[in-house]
Amino acid sequence: GAVVSQHPSRVICKSGTSVKIECRSLDFQATTMFWYRQFPKQSLMLMATSNEGSKATYEQGVEKDKFLINHASLTLSTLTVTSAHPEDSSFYICSAGSGGHYGYTFGSGTRLTVV
Amino acid sequence: QQQVKQSPQSLIVQKGGIPIINCAYENTAFDYFPWYQQFPGKGPALLIAIRPDVSEKKEGRFTISFNKSAKQFSLHIMDSQPGDSATYFCAAKRAGANNLFFGTGTRLTVIP
Image 1 (cartoon, rainbow over the protein chains, first blue to last red):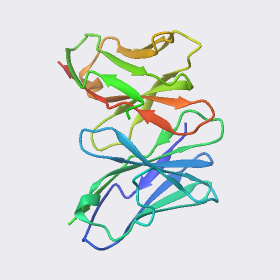
Image 2: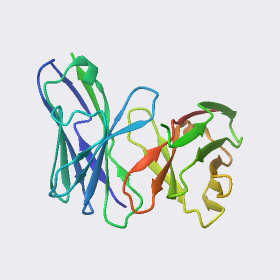
Image 3: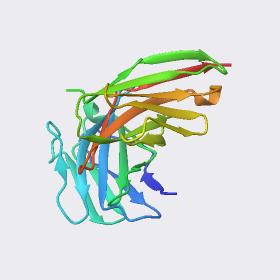
Image 4: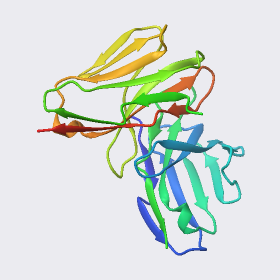
């Protein structure tokens, strides 16, 4: 089946530093990848949609300069949280899908803690 | 604006019981309705999904019932087990679009 690998699973960083999260589709080509943010006991909030080779589309209220998304290949998308602050602490999850494939596969998530 | 409304927020059942989770939507352009299971600290995993042209779909112990006229769909878990304790999310996708709209989630606890 389709597998999406997300790394790291946990990261702790100091306030003001940047953190990169990777999302890889291991056995299929992902033309579209999605990045979500999830607060404790809450639903998934879509942050942005990235299509391979083009700029990401950000949801309203999401700062594109703070959350940099790169989807340079059909198997890799990265989310960089720049100049992280404690309020950026959250669970970040990616998902990947390919054209015509409705069963979007989710990564295992990244727990980011900014201290 | 919540595109997909999910209830209840939490649910506790005895082992062997049949928990039912309900979702409702307004947008008639939705054409795909998946259910996801999420364990703490993990990403959601697809359980089962349905299209609006069928009223029911079963996969193992999981059943989706779909009522197109009422714009509602529900997840039933037969013979529930403690290992089913997790948070369940319904979702919906518009025809021609890529992104999913998620419900608010239901935390299910199955007591041994």
